Image (tube, rainbow, N blue to C red; front, side):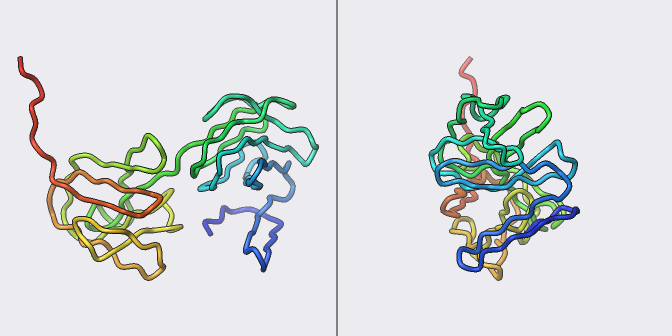
Length: 211
């Protein structure tokens, strides 16, 4: 669990394994809708976050201090929530959530998928992939020095995907999953967050301009 420095009230449900860390001394902010109930974290009482949250297709509102009044807007993936505003329509996906309690500004961003390891740059440097749908991620014509690497989410090992297969395979999120043995070269990379499938392919030459 990637904890942030602070003082929290912690709850844990032994049956469902659900847990929450709620900052003490700050206004509590949560987000709720059908199939979703998440407490957001803060270190200053203004900016609130929750990362890698799974959403079904639903509508949600923010709640401030359990006042019973929902804060929302019809805009997605970002907008400005107001007290009593419309519920926010959220498509099914995984999101990083940001909410500013002072301004009401919020955003639902796709999670970040990156490659990390000596086979990419090093184990302290993430190389982020691009996405347009939060499921399929790509990296174009990247030169790899060769060596071991893994895919990971939000620059954290929660989870990290690994496998012994190259140039394509299905990454495992098991804690002891092996690293991917990347052969030195330039590749286009495709990764599916939902399935863990990945592929490293050699870029092909093409005609750019017939003029």
